[in-house]
Image 1: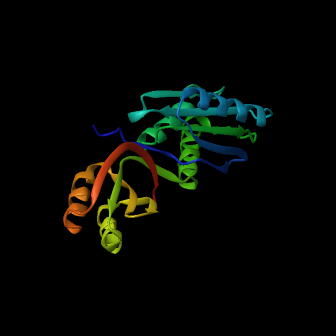
Image 2: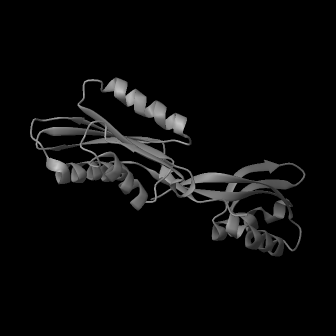
Image 3: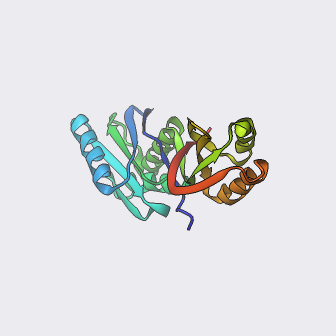
Length: 212
């Protein structure tokens, strides 16, 4: 069964935005559960205890199964929800974003706040590294030394990653193959080695692939 596709911020990122003397500090982090998200939010609140607002949004799990947001004192619906909508629009999950606002003395109005907080998250995603978490099949392939160059030339055609190489009486490559390519790749290896390669399927693992 194919694993659900997750796209998230990879690691963490930060940026800032100033409009009409209000300073917005933007912090994003990759998370896998609500406990991690809550801890990150609380850490930002403690760090920026003197700020007027520490608004946040996060969604976690495939298709954003868990979602939460907070205006933290801003007019209802002008901060947390617009921030969450940017995450949803970009299909970014397993991510929490906190936007800290230092009020500059000039009111932005409801529509101005919505635009400002939305823009902050957009800027944060632009500053962050984004990764797609994709399912890979781990396969150990053993074959005679004479087929090393054959295998090395073949695997890029199937986006295969060579995770490990072992050289003993035979050569063993540990391959990480995109799940949907596993069958064709194994068949191609078998054909290219005239059946001399022994392929042993191990586990499926999810690997973050950074977007370029």
